[in-house]
Length: 130
Image (cartoon, rainbow, N blue to C red; front, side, top):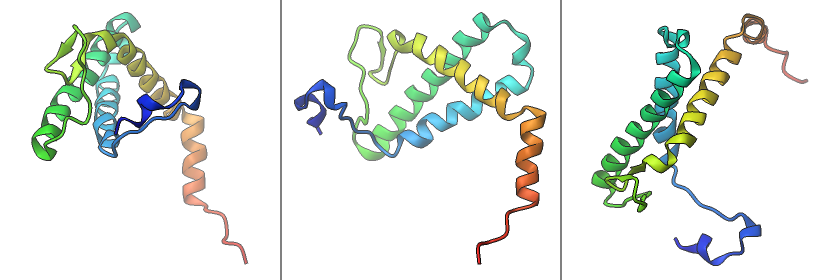
C-alpha cells in the first residue's frame, strides 16, 4: 500500500478505496438538500463554512464506522488539526470550495433548459442501430 511513496511525483501515481464513492457521495447529497431547502438565500461566505463542516462530519463518522467495520483506517490524518485522525481542520478550506462546487453543479443541473433537454432525451430515446 505504500506504492505512491516510492514513485516519482511526475508519475502522479495514487490509489483509493471503493468506499470513497459513498463516503463523499453522501455529503454531496446532503449539501444538495440543504441548498434546496432555502440555504441558497444565505451569502456564499456563510454557506461555504457550513458545507465544509458537513463534509468533515461525514468524513469523521464514515471513517470511524469503516474502521469499526473493516478493522482498517482507510485514511488517516496525522496533522495538528486532526479530529480523531479521521478529518482535519487544515483541509476545511478545501472542503468549503468543494461544497460550493457541489452547489454550482446542482444549480447548473437544475437549469430549466437543461432539465427540459434531458427530459426530452429520456422521453424520446434514439432508435437502436440496425
